[in-house]
Image (cartoon, rainbow over all chains, first blue to last red; front, side, top):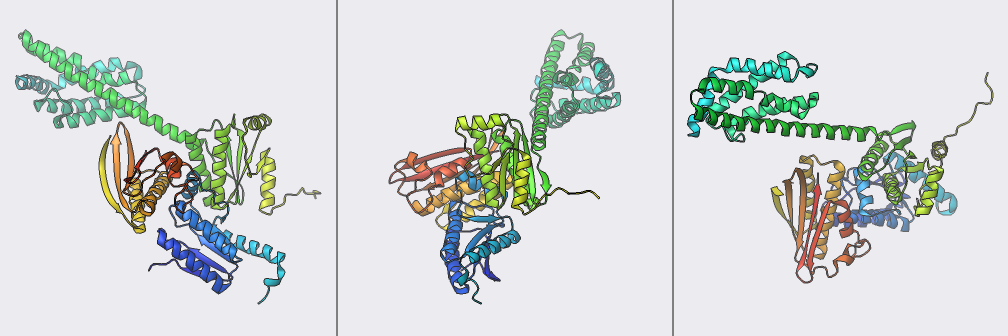
Length: 131
Length: 289
Length: 134
């Protein structure tokens, strides 16, 4: 079955959604992501949606869920690369996605993740520098 | 019956094409004497000769009543081109229609010369020719109007583009100065322009300056909030500034709220905030050497 | 108003939702609708198609290219034979949902298009038609 690859980049995971999402694919992505977060103990997830040409309420909800799941597993999530037309449509649709952090591109997303992780490390120092 | 008459018209046109053309050109030059700035005599002669040739060959087909028929396709498209070019050159609809109507006089006098002895035949041909030329004249007006509408649409689109300029203030900071009343058509284009510029310039901060917006009611506030929400989804922060004292008052009276959106009184305040956000400091040089 | 082009597509699986919205987009791209218009229509189509597949137990969609009185448009009619909707007014509000959705489906789709029509009969099914004009 077709799956969306999840790459490990340093202490972060990178999910790049390149295909038009259908519902089953979205469900399996959530399974894969949570499993990989636990297995790699990654500190953050970058979800690149620059190739997505639409985000409906289902995919929007999936993005929200992925961010919340990452949060529950002690990681930060950032969605990057949303296209202008997609952003306008989501707002008109009535979804705010306020729970999802965003950045313009992968570079800026990476920098944001780093600063978020550094901030949370300084707050609880003990479980961060264990390597 | 119709066939016989149409042959008479076609026959007369074919035999006297050159003198009819000359007389027609004289008519037009008189009618358009005030518009010599818009079209040269040579162009007018070329257009007239082309159309008259097509008109004659269409008449020869035998159909002189239905100009939507395939026999008339070439004449109509030629006439359409003439009308369109005149519409863009700035001719009025009646000046454009004159192109066809001025053919009546030379054409009719030729008919009179040829059919003078046959009163009934002459009356019939005159009627046929009048109906035909009227149809073609109205057709030019229709095309002229459509062409004008296209010009207007194009200008409107251009104006919309011009009225929403996005400017880069600094690396990572862009601004959209808004001037004039905001309606849904304008805000849609604005929003698209702003968001696309955010992508193109890789800016983290977009400042929307509403100093030039006369009123901010709930609808306008809604547009602005949508713009802020869409920018945030893409990963950029949108600041609204230029809220004049009266606007701040009416906003409160109308119950307009900007919620969590950062708003500043002036563009300078917004820029200072933006600099802080991207980690830039502005300082005055203490001494000049 | 006449349909110059039309196509009926089945809607029984989530892959067919993707196929429908991609076809909608390519038809609109051919007619030179703007990117934002394409995205809005495609998103609205996706919402309705998902409703039909998930809550309506599957159905069909008809895509039509419309032309008349000087304008041009695209229409998508999504039909299912599912349980239907008893209170359409309530179903249109933003936070109403009978399933696991966010409840933006119908109300959201309506905001994304120019014309929106819905007919539903409990026990018989639902027909929703959306149109975007150029």
